Figure 1 (cartoon, rainbow, N blue to C red):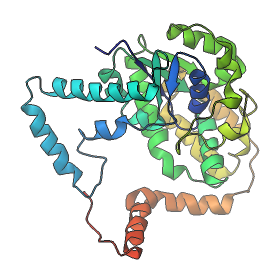
Figure 2: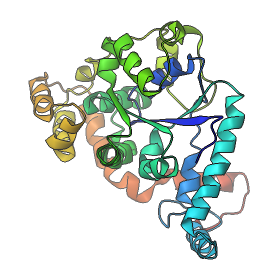
Figure 3: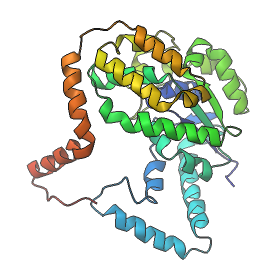
Figure 4: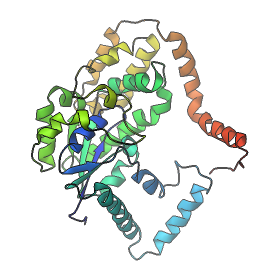
Length: 327
């Protein structure tokens, strides 16, 4: 059981879904403390996984050794998770600096370990934030790609991430809270009232009025919304339509919506068939066609060869550092 001194509050979403907005609003409440994005639990949980990590210390061997160690614990994996939970709780308590009841940990890539987090912290509060996937795609293109096609870099979020979140939400629907970004920005007081009721907290004016002065320090997080908006805005709900106009983008997005599946989208309140109609009705233009062809072609091999790893080795060579094999 967790200490009564602090309760973890997790917000799960895909990147570019408005999680920084809701984090800043909740952090304005006197009972909630937070940090920009911790990524704290990712390496802790991945220590137990045999895949997904490459390192100089040979992660595969590390995971095998950890498995061996866990077998000698009296309670096996339960003991290990209990101590890991205590370690994380201690960090949350120290980071909260005695402010309020909750510590909010918001890290979009937590979609990779959402089931493990819920199992580790069953008494925590778990909030699922959804956004129109087409808006997520467009925001990734505009925010991180400067308008150029870059979705091949975030396929793990769009495919694994959405699937993981849907699975975890359906499995724990009675324990968690779910809301849509579109509803939040069009009815902020109503949606926040429902969320705060789930958290058993009263309404405070600062939740709605504190964005202009509530900036979260840290290198991770939303690089655009914090600077652009000092208040909740719904002006971006249809901006995705101006980013998905080339025939290649329209075809990719339509295929993606079909890949997610209409049932999965309907589970979280979205109409997949309507999305397909919206895509087909968009004007088709040739802007970005040349770069789309190039990036979509290169994107197919990007994940396979992972050039950023090779470039990191080149940087080490330039610094006259020794190159080691990562496993």
